[in-house]
Length: 334
Picture (tube, rainbow, N blue to C red):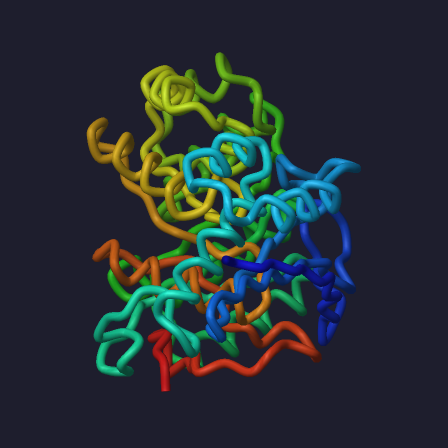
């Protein structure tokens, strides 16, 4: 018989981090532990307040419910947790860890420390000087693909991109931007053209999620590839996922397992994307090293050919121990 418990954990940022949802100083998360016959598995239910589909008052109650029903069938639990993607992902992790032991979720040459995952460097929002300093740090570390958060002060952000592109051609430096829905439809049309002139790889979520007609129109005319991110959150049924991708037909989708239904949910999105010749990559969502480790191990199994958006666990002062290490832009396990 399995037993399950959970506990809340508050991650503290080393420095306040600017996002489209304001300045973050802490990040709430939950650890789910499942035990059976002296074996233990741990998973992270990485809720993201203000963004997660399951950011609802009954979140803790649902975690308690899962612990009380942990011996029910996987199919039953998945159905009951359909609208709680981060809890379902935590369950998937804990079950895999229970089976594989130590810090292993998906045994591979990655977990053996023999293979790595290429990742992009993430530049946080802030003043032009602050963003410039981050960019220089990432370039010095050996990154040749960086992602900038934009949509707060486009004039300054565009100037930084121009400066970067002048110094580094696209063959030398891949530039991705993430607007987090920061532009209106009319603004986005102009920005997409300006990004194209700077040979930007892609823009994530140029306008707010939910404006299907507008984002579909932008994807059909854009000179800069568009990647859907927030647009995928809360779409939990396979039929609805299929309809969304076929309607909008984006160039890319961005997959955060904690937000889109864990391993099984991400697998569905990838299958649909590939059937529609839509590119994709996987991104972490400020999880602790528990969740990040599971996401990295899962990502490696998908044989992605382009840089992934995985964090490095270095944002927090009180993160948990991990074997994840970064060599240049290569994420590995020691």
